Image (cartoon, rainbow, N blue to C red; front, top):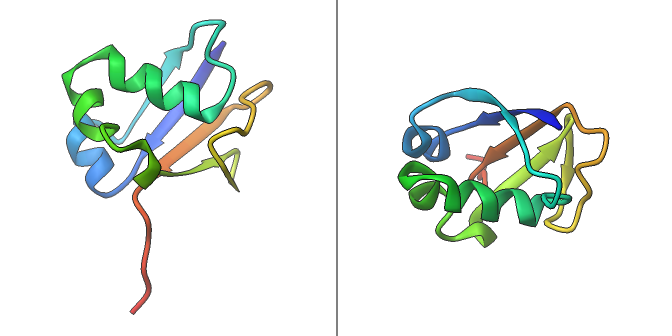
Length: 85
């Protein structure tokens, strides 16, 4: 399944790209599995997703938790927690 992943803030800095289109393996079925796969894929991913509990995610513009399924998703946005000021 092809999926567009957009990275924001320090996640983008660690990944070295703002977004990418990836072909995810069949066993990557939810957000938690996606973060684990990205962390295992290469050094930038390992740095960006070393602490997956710190990552917030939106699937197709809707905030989701780690157990959210990826079936039918077109875009996943990954970013650190955001605070207002």
